[in-house]
Amino acid sequence: MSRSKVRNLLLLKQIHSAVAQIRKGNLDKALETLDKAEDSAKKAKATDAVYYVLFMRGGIYYTESKYNEALETYEMAINAGSELLKNDPENTNYRHYMGTTLSNTGNLLKNKGEKPQAAEYYIRARETYVNLLAKEPENAVFRSAAGENLNNYAALLTDMGYFEEACEILNQAIELYEKLLEEKPDNPGYQAELAVALSQLGNCQIQQDPEKSDTAKQNLEKALAMQENIFAQQSENTAIKDAIALTRKRLEKLETLKKQENPESLEKPENQENLEKQEIPEEQEK
Image (cartoon, rainbow, N blue to C red; front, top):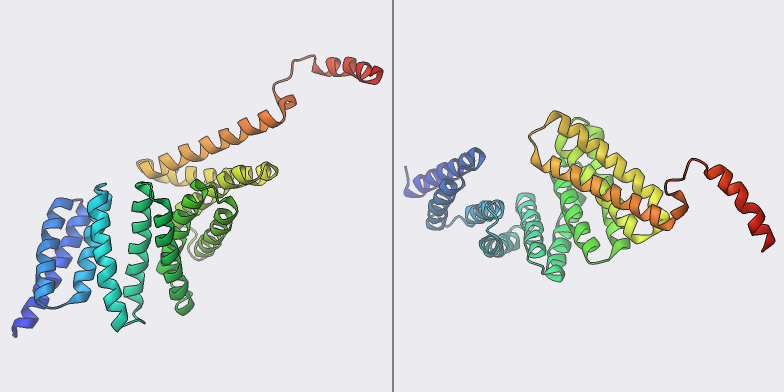
């Protein structure tokens, strides 16, 4: 067997080992394996493997909340991916990894408070998935990833006060996930992402226009029902538990705003009807 084939087999084995370690939660061990895989990939001059290794390493750092390391790694991955796409611009796998890397970089920058820079990466990710879906409109993986990026981008826009644009983006995400759920109605991942989009849309509508409060409430209640349904099946899912708490908080905020705008809707005394009858003559005397 040639030396190059041996290197390629070793590289493949290392990458598979790293993936298995990630799934088991052995992240430190996975990082060690990825270091070895990157060395093997460089010796084999396998740029695509280097790109994939950087992509996985960035994901581990992101999971561990090592945001500076993750950001540095994702930037290297973006550079490696850009070189690959120059030579093979039609490769959908490269584009998919690029879209995810760009979106994750946007998340990192948002967490660091660098909002305008985060928006740039979300926009680039969005454009990447628009192009991918133009070629493979039925690809569920691409559609789901596109929807997740839209959710993240809309959250940033809401934070920045761009409510109209955020609502527009969220409606696009909702459309994507509703179609995915039509195809696989029992998919909890699609349900969770749709619920996120609906909850965010309700929150955005509350801040955009008080007259949209009824629509906002409908979206929030729909999101809450979906999240509670998921939680009933996955009671150990802390992410869903947190999402439920956030949606309930938004509903409470909406009710508070309604009471502030309509103080007469506050709790009435038992003899309110009689009081209202007594007030009529006073108004007529004015």
